[in-house]
Image (cartoon, rainbow, N blue to C red; front, top):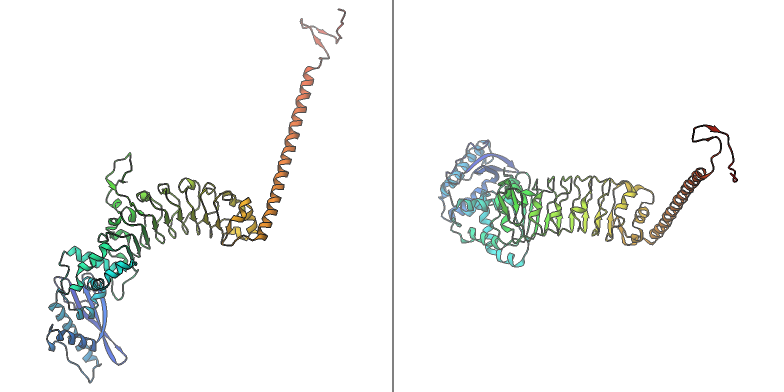
Length: 513
């Protein structure tokens, strides 16, 4: 690896260190140290006085010999030759320290090399000591505890190594403090980041870790952490009530049914199937709130049937094109599908018939067909779509429970008297509907009444015209029929044809004959 030629690898933990350069800051020289552990590396900057302070701490603890550090120089301390020589000497000094402490690194050296920020033992030690002092108070307070993927990765790696939970002899840094805390924690937030962490090459959102150490979680929030790399998430199926996963997933299945990656055919516990299955998957029995917004989810797959208790589902800012499989969520009352790729709503009532709040903002909707049977709907957001015709509102005008409708940022809003024309579609319920987050005014209601009266007059006129037209058609049919019957029943005049086929002249019947 470039810049690591001077590294001296440790055979156990694969740690290495090298000073790869220097820079002049004001009137002193700063040395650029590159540290490596395994495949990860990072940079640390220190001036000579920092080395001197480190050396003083280590010698005070009888860790090393005093003459190990290169001596101070007063004259020409920033000359190129001196800086280059000192750089080599300081590199040897650090390598000697790592060789002397292959497993348990003194706290002063650990902080000097930023092990507490980037190396698994240092990261875990800092967290363990924090929980040793404050863990119990945090649990009692019931607050959300924040962790980073890097911390969880460190814990996972240390448990995987199977080494003693305390290797430096300091009881406060024992891994057991972390395990005791995570076992009882109820509220967790995991916040990662894209791009390298600090001065390292660590891509935090690509770190794998195991959540099976959490046994009591009721609420979890995961952000910027690849869902496919998270193991043990399902260990909290019996306790988790609220789940938020953002900027982390490309499918719902990766989160709800990670077992699907291992088995070709799976089925939810208690369900029947006509097809052979290779796995029966336990349900998320207490999960009621799921937020998977801001991901790259393209469809609502059948993994939702594994969480039938969901009441609140947020899938905004994804790339979903159709509404599928939500019939399995018979408790669903709040659905957020805003800012997706939806272009049609046909048959939606068969999927979300009991929905009360529906957010469809920021999609590609031109028609509202399909919404007319959502009889439980109370709140509807249709803002930022492609609705241009007032007549589309007829599809929601007769919904008995609808109270709020948002149509902002649609072309229909530029129509003259848009608000009153839309409100008129709700008939006698116009006063009960809040349009575009603005309460209906008395003036608007008066105008609505006028529009309704005009509409009724038009309907009455059309009905009358249709009645007159029908009567006219009936009269013509009756007249035509009467004429036909009259002609059919009148005496035949003209030539009479005898039974013998001879022609006779017209004659009048003689009553005396």
